[in-house]
Length: 476
Image (cartoon, rainbow, N blue to C red; front, side, top):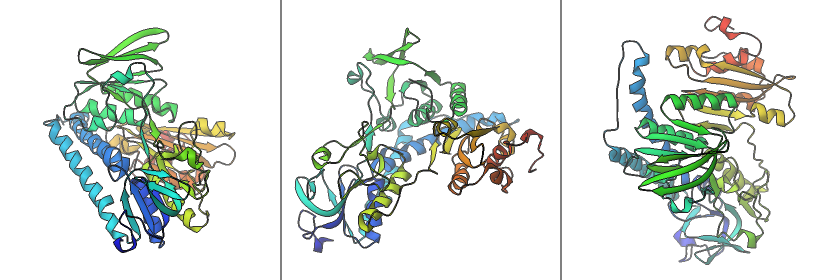
């Protein structure tokens, strides 16, 4: 790479593609382009690897697994004759182990990969669009096409007084060397639910507050059930409220809320803000370059990942849609193909799975009942409780349910959601069913392995036409 580049890291004759952002989306775009023989410049600013490996998926999921281990030991008594107990012996050691995992994956899956692709040059610096390409640390880098993949950052709610409170974010909460005695979690989305349960299981007293309800995009039956399960673990869940003011007094944080016109105060040692993420679009020169953004700040792209500016594409969380790491990588791959090959690849999220790593896990794909009806479909639904699933009975853990949404006329599946301890690993079957246009009848007639959680999908599909409680094991 050094032979073709000037001292500032740029090729004298320019690059085929410039990728701004060195996270999952940026690496996906750069690798895809390099595999096609293109010369690519990947521009990173800050910690290489982006959100997922550094401060998102990897650190949170290993901590969630640790908390699950604690809970599993304590819940052993659900089996007659068993007893168990576990506790956090050393919080700092747990955090250090998490940091070690993050560092290892960052090195192996990002830093070390750069030398594996001769077509990728890496530049570190603040990037900004200009008319001919990009500026990196105010030095011009010429490129035929550009992909913006700068991700997103923690959004801060507009609660009066929040600017004077040393609140935690999903990033800093996983970095603290002192476990909070009590924690107030603001926001009932997937991050709030996951971290609230994780901290509660490790010994923190947790209160979870949200304006609407938990997991607003999930089916109501699933959100309500999850709220009950969290409450049974000692988490105080408060929903359907407004925030009036937040302040810190005497080393504790106090949140004043309004519930049906009545003011209440909630107090905790620390507060964790999990109210969504904002696309990283500041200082990129988007307005000057003619790249339009949506009201939420995300870069507007069409189904080919093209922005309003010719030759400029965008992918990942910076677009403000489908903010999952695998969708960021998918969209970036399409953007790279389109930038180099004439815009023939179309973004399709019809069968996009999503997972919430609570326990039970929540997973879904396709349309919810409400979304399907809003789109004008005449639908039918089937709900199978986990107490009808042999796997759950054998595990003595029947927390959860499975809900399917199908077209009332054609029987074609529109969506599926699962609330189950192993729901994350079961949703892919529903993904394939929806991707390939299966009907509920066909899913119900498919052979599933016995004593698996995914068998619940078969039972839910059969539930459209029969009472599955009247079936023997493996019948139907």
